[in-house]
Amino acid sequence: MINDLIYVYCISRTPPRLITGMGYSTVESLMFDDFHVIVKYVSKSEFSEENFKKNLSDIQWAELNARNHIRVISMIMEQSTVIPFKFGTIYHTKASLETFIIDYADSLIESFNHIEGKEEWSIKIYCDRKTLCEQIDELSEEAAALEKQIMESSPGKAFLLGRKKTDLIENEMDRICKNYGQKYYDEFKKLSESTSLNNLLPKAFTGREETMILNTTFLVSKNKVADFISTVETLKKKEGDSGFIIEATGPWPPFSFISIKEKQ
Image (cartoon, rainbow, N blue to C red; front, side, top):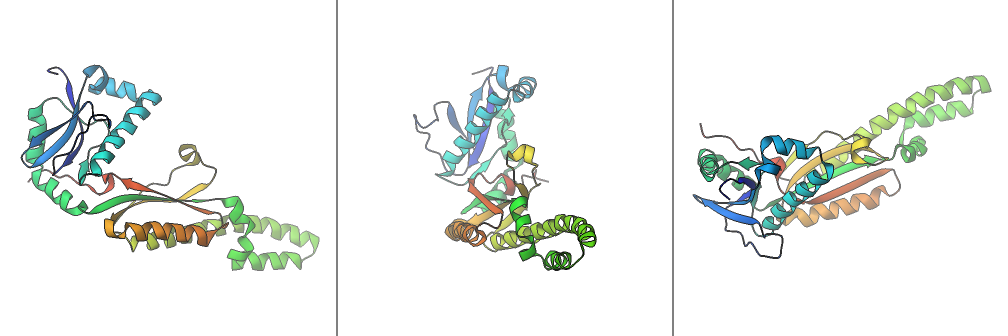
């Protein structure tokens, strides 16, 4: 292991139970001060800076190792609060890792205090615009009024108003999606300690036909998780076939709520 690199998964304030047969065969715990750092030794052929960048272009390799990264952290999370490290965090020596821990000790403690007793949950909301369009006259007074005007007009005028309504529908669907997204966000925010808004992802990335209208992570106290999940289920039933789809996943390692700053 002399020439190996140190791959870091996460930090815990309590000693983890690394049980053989649960995927921990190559994972170790190193202790620096009062912190337990969960690591494994990896070869330079895979994880040197140059080789790691090359391997990321191999989708199968990247997916397998990224899933393993989250899996190990999640298993440690079942035992204690952890500060997760991003996929591919490497240190060349124990000394350099120890230096990091010492330099950032105060910030690590602050982060632990912030996330202790809490879980990160992801909420993604999608809209099936085709389904929403079919209900637009029920959801938009402007669209309903214009449709009434079309029905009462001559064929020529109705044709022109129909083109106007096509543009109106697109604008109204954007407005409705924005309002629904804000409504959902407010519902979940009330049950959370902290929130983090993420970029909306295009269809090419999500692999879904529906349009993403909200992408948020919430830091939820464990004693409110049941209410959080219940709210998800209630909103799913309430919206029914409206075209809005709620996707909740968790708990995740609290990547979104960790801020490590060097001691000044």
